[in-house]
Structures are given as structure tokens and as C-alpha cells.
Image (spheres, rainbow, N blue to C red):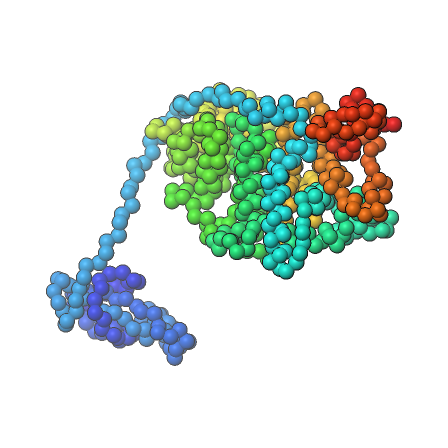
Length: 589
């Protein structure tokens, strides 16, 4: 008797209850019979039953193919698969057939250069021109992202959360800006304990922080800081408690992003050492443990779009792509909300595949990236071992005839695979490379797509570098406090990138930019309700520090602090009315 053991599929019938060991013995006694039966092994009725821990017998015995006792004594369903006639009262039904996946024809690879059919980049950016005409200060640029709507939203959600905990917080927008100022300041002035900002000890007391908000009030606000309604959280989203903030920040980032042709896509890390399940270990990043964040940036490092990674358990990728490729498609969809333009996206081998290049080409988007060999759809290039034996700068390439996708294998210090749907081999240029053996620099040939990739791919790395310099140091007990610090740092980075574009004549570095915003937020939003606080406010006046003073327009006319005549301009940091002609003298007198 022939025999098969199947799991959960086959022919449905009425059941003959038997033990698997009995059935196997019967089969061995009737091997001459040609009838074919299929056996389905049923699970035990009780996992803690009498046979669960029973041994399956002597190891030298071949009976039962070394199956455990729980399986040997399990019930089986015996089904005849003969001619289809009734046998001993069994009713047979045909098995369900599996659908066969459509077999796609193999790609045809040819040795020639790519002939892309994308249009040239001709788009202008009127929004950046409008920002240049406004001559916004650093605070004005930062408030493009943490605008009035976002501030009021955080205030309302924080007050709602405190009210749910039976606490009357009564947070105001002014107090929240003080909290933001302290968080920004902690990026370049940090203490082992944040309460040291308010200590009266001369070695740690910080008069700007102590004069802006009381210590206990800051601790209370920071402990109840909230960004979503707990009664409306999505159980399928691990970042539901910060999802409204992510949506708002993505909207503001995209609204004010410079309109450029070249963008980078990659992974960033938000440092976190707690017990939250979403954290990951990434060995290739300066920050190795924390939340992984998918980021799309400009080539200079402006963050256009971001999404925290939740893995495939909570984020379902497209059927034809992996999770990384699906995130690239989401970023492209966000870019195309501003218009269907021939953007050019650069990413590394974590995301690149020939299938992704094909999808982006159909969307009208150019893309270039390094690619792993098993994702090249069997492109017949020279073997890496053979290419390594050739001189440095040698390369091989092939183009898919149907979709104009090129795969190039280039020998540099190691063998690199690069795929593109928009850039080809020509023109091949010479580039300088360091030779370790000769300890000199040599000239090697470099294809055009390799050169462009190396120039434009580093946007996410530049953003990470800017964030890491002066990132927010204050952390709370809640799992998302480090993520909030990351969002603040990203907004500051974006504001500074806009400052570099809009204020080319009076640029400041990133440290001075952050210091200016922190000082303005702490000085202009300080609590001056009591006489003692008012005297401390006057002592913290930074009128003569020559750091971050900007003259801005004001709607209501006030008296000039120097000449005492009416003026419609004021110093944003000092919060004093002052004429443009009196501005310099007021700050040095």
C-alpha cells in the first residue's frame, strides 16, 4: 500500500478514527496492495494529555520514522484516493487546486548604454523666492514648522491628557515655548541632571532658564506632554501616540521644502535604550540602538518626509517589493503631491532592486542606487572575482531592452554594483583614487552614473550629522520623549537649511542658529508675573552680547528704546522697539 502524509489539504471525507501507530503497522503488513491512501495527522485533543511527554521508543528502532509519542498516538483521518467510488461508506470530494503564479518572461540584457526618455528639469521654486523676500529671522524659520497651529494642538492635547489624570495643568502656548527653549538649549549646554539648571550653586545655575520658568512647573509640564487622544488610538500603529505630530510635521516639512531635482532616501536612527518593542539594533549607524526612521531628504540634508519603522508585522509592504522598497514608493508619492516632475531619487543597496527601478520609471521618477547581486534579475555581468583581477576602474554593464534599466559593475577598492533607470555609462571620466599599495593617488575610469551617485546620495547622512552635533539631551520617562527630541532637532535642521538658502549674505552656523532660537524663546516667553521674577528678568537682559539680534516689523507702533520716538520695528531678541538707524547704537551703548 502506498502512503502519503499531508498537513491540512487533500480529500475531505468522513473520518475513521484510529491511531497513527496502528495505521503505520497496517501499511507495513499490506505493502503489496496498490491502493493509495492519504493520512492527515490530527493535533492532540489536550496538549497536556497523558501522551504529551511520552518518549517515542528506542532510538535504534526504525518503526514510525522516529516520530514523537504525541504524534504516534494522535488520531488520523484515513481517506481512500482510488477511482472516486464510495468505499466503506466514505464520501469523497475533490481537493482544491492551488492557483499557479503567473510566470513572467525573463529580462533580455544587452551590452549597450541606456537611452532614457525622461524630460529635463525646468521647474522653479516660487515658495523659496517668497521666503527670501520676507527675510525671516531664525525664529521665524523655525516657526514655519512649529507654527501656531502645531503649538496650540500640543497645548490642547497636553491639557486633555492632564485632565484625564485629574490634574488641572492649564498649559499655555507661552509656557510650551519656554519648554521648547530649554530642550533646544540642552543640545549645547547639558548637565548630568536637568534640575541643575535651577540650582543656586554658582557652578551650575543658569539664569536664563531659571528666569524663564520655575523648575517644578517645567517638570510638571514635561511629564504630561502629550500628542494624541488616548481614547482614539489606533491599536495597529505602534507610534499612535505621536502619529498626529508626525502627520503635522510631514505636512509642514513638505510645504516649505526646497523644490529640487535630486533627493536621497535612507535610514536614520533615533537613540533609545528603553524597553519599547519598536527599537532596533543597526550596526552600520553611529547611533546603533533606537528607533529606525525612514527618511527622504534633499541632497543638502533638508528632511522632506519621515516615517518611523515598525517592521513588516505592523507595516505591510507591497506584494512585489520588500519593506524598504515600499517606503521609497511612499516617499515618491509624497513628492508628487507637489507636482509630477522628473525627480531623481538616490538610495543604497538596502532599497534598490530592478523591480523598484521599473515601478519608479512607470511613475516618471528617475532613480539610481547600489544594488545587491541577487536583486539584479540575473543580469549577466562579469564575475566579481574576474573583475577584481582586472585593473582598477574596469567595469561591465548591461541594459534591459524592454524597460531601459542599466546595471553596472565597477571595480574600485572593491566591486560595486549600481543600478539606474536614468543615467548611463557615458561620459566616462577620470577620477583620483588613493592606492594603498603604492601610497599615492592614481587616476581611474569612472562611469557617469557612479559619479552622480557619489555626489548626490549623502543627504540623509548630512542630516544625521547636523542632528548629532547639538541634539536635545533632556529625556523623560515616556518612551516617545527621545522621538520628540528627534523631531525638534529635525525641525531645527530644516530651518537652518532654509536660512542658508534665503540669507546668503548674513549666514550663521548651526550652533549660533540654535542659540538664537533658544535665547529668544526663553527671554520673550519668560514668566514675569511676580516682582521677583521681573527683577531677575532685567538681570538676564542680553542687550550687549552681540549674539542673534534681528530687527523685525511690528504691527503696533511703540517708542524707540534709544531715541524715544515712534517706530514700527523692534529687536526680536530684546523685545524692544528700536529704529533701524538706532539698532546698532542701542546694542553697543
